[in-house]
Amino acid sequence: MQGKEISVRGIAVSPGIAIGRAYVQQPREILAPNFLVAREKVEEEIERLHRGLERTRERIRESRSRLAGKIGEDHAAIFDAHLLILEDTKAIEDTEELIRTQLICAEFAFNRVIGRIIESFDTIGDSYLRERRADVEDVRRRVLHSMSGEAATTYGGISEESILVAEDLTPSDTVMLDRRFVLGVATDLGGRTSHAAILARSYGIPAVVGLEQLTEHVRHADEIIIDGNAGVVVVRPGEKTRSSYEEARQRFIELEESMLTLKDYPAITLDGRKIELSANVKRPQDAELALSKGAKGVGLYRTEWFFLTRDDLPGEEEQVRQYAEIVEAIAPEPVIFRALDIGGDKFASYLGAGKSELNPFLGWRGIRFLLTRRDILRTQLRAFLRASARGKVKIMFPMITGLEEVRASSGLLEEVKMELRGEERDFDEGVEVGIMIETPSAVAIADLLARETDFFSIGSNDLIQYTLAVDRSNARISYLYEPMHPSILRLIRNTVEAGHAHDIWVGMCGEIAGDPLYSVLLVGLGLDEISISAYMIPEVKRIIRGITYDEAKTLARKAMGLSTADEIRTLVASVMHERFPELVAADAREGVP
Image (cartoon, rainbow, N blue to C red; front, top):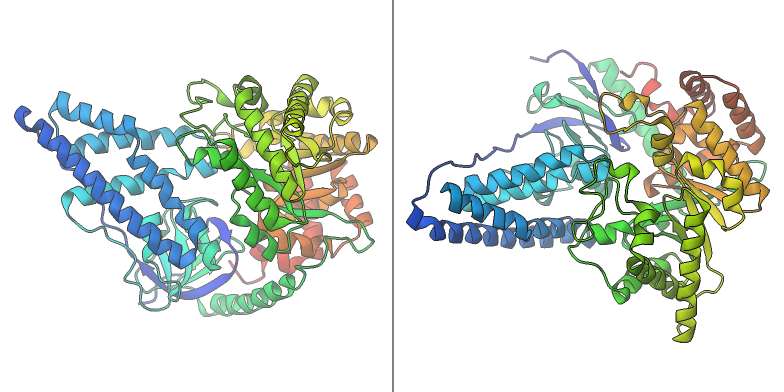
């Protein structure tokens, strides 16, 4: 019997609309056995642990190879982090210690140690890192399966066109999926950087995650609709709803095709105001996607990911190769390298930053860390400059709070330039040097900072967090993390005005820069450059090319005259829905829940 229509809202992570039958399969969880080991059998139990770990490594290498063949080496690198987890000396030693001291079996000891690591992810603020909890969970499950001799349940059984409905997707699950049969993805858990999201975007299929209890409402073979534009999933749709979504799906396909025709056109308003629309990336392999979406260079290269995905410090030559690869791929457009932004909620155990601090966001992070570890900064600056011989490079320092930090950083850069000249190494003498504007103190002295820098890039995520004194990862107060707060708009405007008064350009990276709803407002506030996820470039470019600069300034002026975030958001939404209903009003279509 056809059940009642249900609409569930989650997080839209991959655009598009899919209509089909649900494939629901809950992977069977394996429980860690708990039994005692005779004292004389302890060493044998430890040896059994190591055999289980080695079997797991072999299976992960096989999975890595299979995924690389499916969607590329870049995404297969997910499994490199899994191998690093299995090589974690401390975790292995702690497991051995539990076996020896408490005489418990290897599975139970390993499960207890890995469980502590999993729990620690709950305190991490950065969504990307917090969602890596799934990686550790995947490794835990793999090891327990390897030691039990059982095969893990996967989604490899999908053999006809279906919409995958799951609690979550791990890398192990993604290996077994057949793109030919997966029309869309919906998961209870996950966020924008979860594996389900990454997989869906790589395959170009609609996806909604973070649906919480969707799996409790969906039966196998139920008809289901995935709206990856609005973040809505409809279970057992009625005829009217299905018809509305079928029409919406066709409109979306036509819209996608039309937006991609703008790939080689500039992001320029109808009256001639040009915005540099660039991409945020963190690996050289991201260059192909950025260019395919029409990015005008790289506005933020997050170099910390090169440090976080390994267990030792990369040397100069290794960094030069990494940076030169992206520079050559993007040339002749520029690449803006952000110096290592470690600390806060991003730390590497071998560097020691952030992990032991009570409040890492207010502690040893960003430029503060770099200026106390000048050996690391010096090596990175040498690598940046050497890579500049291969194309257009700009350098950016993170978490600036005062002029002293700018002068210290710039001074070290000049020392490095002198070294390279003495070594007769090629580099671009005209490399631009800028700073991230992420703190209220930086905005307050933006006029002073602008005198000694070549450009500003507003880091909206941290600027909002520090200005409003809110940890957006804290569920109790996350509602206070408000991009449209009047104070945030004033800080953006003040930064732009200070930069322009001293003839430097001002850009923005961060989540609000990539939200199409706010595109016109940001243009109206005077930004010269916007750096966003490559996936959002066609949509934002379409909006910029569909308005005049005068219209954008008028919207910004009206917004600045309002008193609350709700008033500002209502104004912006009404203007955007009127001008670009096909782009930003996906969740307000008449007749569609």
